[in-house]
Image: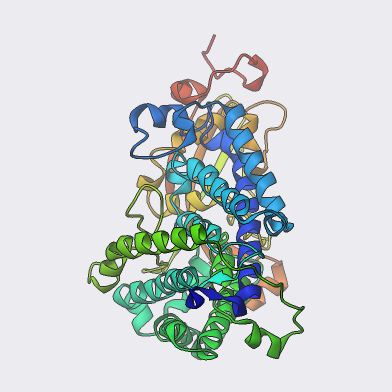
Length: 496
């Protein structure tokens, strides 16, 4: 089957697979560094509690067979080691079947984490990484030419990501249709980056031009991915430039980098050679029959599973970031169908005072990524994902988002739980836990140029209301993980 092989995409395949491997590596490292406080045995939403009520056929995961924090860490470190090996080129040095097995093992390990991650893993980029990683297995390695059916499946995936995001915008918020959404977005996005303040202060006409360009790239350009070369490559490169612009303007975990990886898989080597020096291509072997049959079977499977996301694209009630199967294959994607006009932030505070009164001094906990201190410039964390900080943005929009876990988070601050404190940038009570912890809701705004020059403050804030009343250990003891170390907390007044 001569039509099956596309050797001219060898470089796009290489870049795509290495980028996906790098993002798997980041995903596993983020999981191992955060899971104990979030979903560990003593976490806010423990995996054992989840697997006890949700059967394996609804959330396939290795952790239904056995869970312990040590097992979870072993899965993460194994996945990280395998991803690092693939990133270093190991998959191109082994037989085709071994390379595919390595990719599928990466997919199984990360699927096992996502399917028990609950609200901490309920993001579109988790499904996008799983779908991309699964398809990466069927691109083969340097020993065979890239199979044409899988290249088309990757373009179909990129189309769903971009076109889905474009449709959800124009069908959603009015500000996308009148080109004013970026008057608010840079300030109100989940986790601003170091340049977000400057993006926010661009002139209004430039904001409108940004929105118009976004509509063009997400609604027109994706169609060109299915046209002959070099048009498809030009479309993919235009999407790449747009994603780099988004990377500069905020923190969106690995969503933008993964979109870039998908886009570069659609660029043929001759187009790249016009822009950059390209090394000599490897000499591929003919694809074995079993590989061709397997690729065709996966293509048929993806075509069948595409019914639901395709129907979602044409539906007036389009859903955003929806998985239609428990394996996170052939999903619906989208982002920012509506834009917040006002930024709210939950500020968590504690005090060592034994009694509450007007003169009580409250000290703030500092988060790594989400806005807090007014003079602290937002940092760049993406493609690394700070899960607690992202969920705090949702909790500020409505307490409903924080209901499953926010009380448990406060409870762990009341005992200075070390796993939880590692998710924060600064704990104002390093020696002994606070007597009381509370949370206040503030409205945050970017300062103007004059205020920044005179005060050094990037943010200004005004109080809105109490978000979570002052509580002691006694109030939330039922949410506190068992500990045998009595030095982790100091008894509240009246406690034995």
